[in-house]
Image (cartoon, rainbow, N blue to C red; front, side):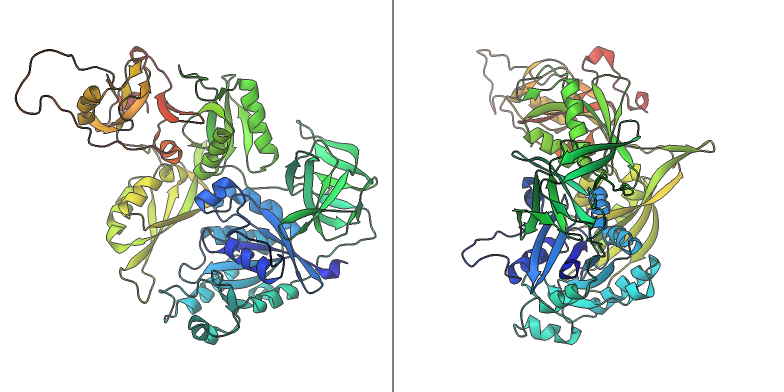
Amino acid sequence: MAQSLRNICIIAHVDHGKTTLVDFLLKQAGTFQAHETTADRMMDSDSQERERGITISAKNASFLIGDVKVNVVDTPGHADFGGEVERIMDMVDGAILLVDAVEGPLPQTRFVLQKAIAKGLKIVLCINKVDRPEAVGSNMVSECVDKAFDLFVELGASDEQCDFPIIYACARQGWCTDDVSKIPTFLEGGGQRNLKPLFDEILRIPAPKANPDSELQMLVSNIAYSDYLGNLALGRLKSGSARKGQELVRHGVNEKGDPTATKFKVFRLLSYEGMKQVEVDEINAGDIGLIAGCEVLEIGDTLSGLNGAALPRISVEEPTMRMIFSINTTPNSGREGKAIQSRELRERLLTEIRSNVALRLEDTEVPDQFYLLGRGELQFGILIEKMRREGLEFMVGRPNVLMKVEEGEKLEPFEKMILDLPESASGDVTKMYQQRKGVLVSYDTPTAAGSDEQRVRLIFEIPTRGILGTNSMYKTATRGSGLISSESIGYRPHAGTIFHRQTGSLIADRDGKTTEYALASVQERGQLFIGEAVDVYEGMIIGECAKDNDLNVNPVKPKKLTNMRTTGSDGITNLYGVKKMSLEKCIEWIDDDEWIEVTPKSVRLRKKILAANMRSVRKIDKV
């Protein structure tokens, strides 16, 4: 049975086209009936995935090539979701490495490819977007193949892995070829416009090595939840077969890390057919499926027969930063959502950790505040938005990197940051990151035919602290056309003080509703975040001060009405403009002495100490 199975994953950097490719694999394999309607990016099922255009969590699907069932896993392309990638590598035997024909292999490609090579997977290189204007008529496609080969060698791939097959594709149009000389024909509308060469390579990926006659063993790689079936364990059967009604053992660990074993009876079995989960009576060795019946599950557990042993638990790379979560203590608490207590907040964060092995929870000295440890700002931002959409009210602080002390020396995480940007912006960007202790290690000018503006690729080695909060500034400096990606390069000696931002805050000094008259005078001191007729409270941040110190202001002062009249404008006031602060911008902007108040309706900024007479306004007092 295992010979008629193939388990593969798609490896790619953000926006290199992997979800689009999976769409066409499913469609061309005949997964859907003629009368079925299908949406674009079917694997991006979560609302935030569709809004952001990225893959956040690994998802499964399957299709048939003749009599062979292919289980395919769509993996995230962003480094913040590396935990998703690491746990699904145990489920597959091969991978399609998808690389943009112009951008080439980028950091996340490297990160996931390193995991795949270490697992000994067979890899098929797919050069995507060969129809991009910069790639047409240039030698960028062959350069991309050379860069991919160099990356394989650098990551220690075996001779067999380095001898990878190459497919040239345009996933957006649903065609590919294994002959580089045929690309111009396809671009002109000719050739067999399908993915058959890629299907052929998928069939050459080894079938899963699994023994159907031995005791059942399955590593829980993911957890799903059903309102009708409860927790569902997702994974690949390493050996044996699972049948409905069978007694199994869950091998897990308790809070102290000691191994535990719990018996349970299989209630339902589910397998993948296309995008759907369908009920089956049996799952055989080598196949990927879901098992229902065990009430308590954690990723990394092993499900086995009554005489089976536990498999090694899934290990992921250590978190590099943490963020503090707190109950909402503002005067507005409970007005716009459910103001949860500390017990409920802790339970909600624990629920997230059970389904995401890359996150950890730590208690603080304050009983209603908790540290969540993770990989990056994007990972935290997506969790905060998810909790906000659930109707919860809470507060979060600024992300901070995790330091280490070894042999008396303070160490901090560093990252290799790759920037692709217009040459005209390189001076401003270089200055910005050098001020944040970044060291420029490479300045490259990739050749691109047909490009209107020369672009450069900069590589910095920089402390993780130096990257935090710079995304908006980078987009502004490059006018939205700059690309940024990074990968961890380990811990190095502490680089010294890095000022998070050079400006202070404009802070409301009393409760009330803002007036245009008051804001007109406040806006002379900096940039406003809110407009008129907004409820504010003492300690709430209403804007960014132009100077480096904080400034307490009165935004609710009304205009005194008199019967005196003057010539001219008669005191007409105008607001220059309000800077709207999204959740991501707030996470980038806040300092260590500030909170973000998150409710289903609003995202506000405030000082941790609300009373103006209890806190200093000088920046030097916060360092």
